[in-house]
Image (cartoon, rainbow, N blue to C red; front, side, top):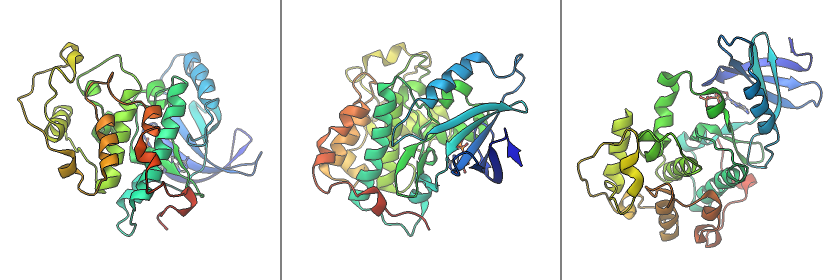
Length: 302
Ligand code: ADP
């Protein structure tokens, strides 16, 4: 069955936050693609123009570490977003018990993540929904960020099923209800993913927003006003009982000093003090040994 005269529909790949994703062949290029069908709900005039304008911007967001949005069109009341097809994702890598990740492999995965982030942040686009299954892996081992900008465009309609996992990657300012936030939210999420690569399990698994903050504070200690002065002005700020926090070395016994130093800067409480994706890439962790594994040599699920 052809969609919009161009795409040959293949099997369903999965159900995502915004709707079903299926595999297809682009008859124009012969390329395999993934098409994300987004339910548009009951909007008066179908696809709204603001969304279309933003999608046009996303199409221009081209970088080796960002999934390319090849095409976007409305069809039978749904918006269809066409992306390059990717073999697997970082969640599958992390969960696969048969995969050993060396320090150089971890460095490579986190470097590619930060490269994608730095590129988008430079263009003033935030991801806002970074998690390991949004980091897709291509046939040559390249990691690319998926779903860039979609969180803001379409919101999260299915909060109950999907926000559960997204919560583990949420920055403290978001958990305190910040309405104005910046690229720091993606850096915090990248730090959680870094931690997850080291631990091979999600680092801070809160079961509610309050519990998530509790987990963060139990790990790093309740933030002191000297660390994060603006915290008290956040809409949902509540005072938490003092907890001391643990040394990073105890939390991540396998990590090197360089890795821990970078991690601590990415996990900075105050979003204004948090390291940027670009600064993180310039951290000595990436220039000191072991050097990041070449993407083609990275271990991947069969
Ligand atoms: P979520 O919104 O929960 O992150 P997605 O909508 O991104 O989920 O994806 C749903 C399913 O489609 C997932 O199983 C994912 O593996 C698959 N998928 C999404 N994008 C691609 C892609 N570009 N290539 C291959 N598979 C994809």
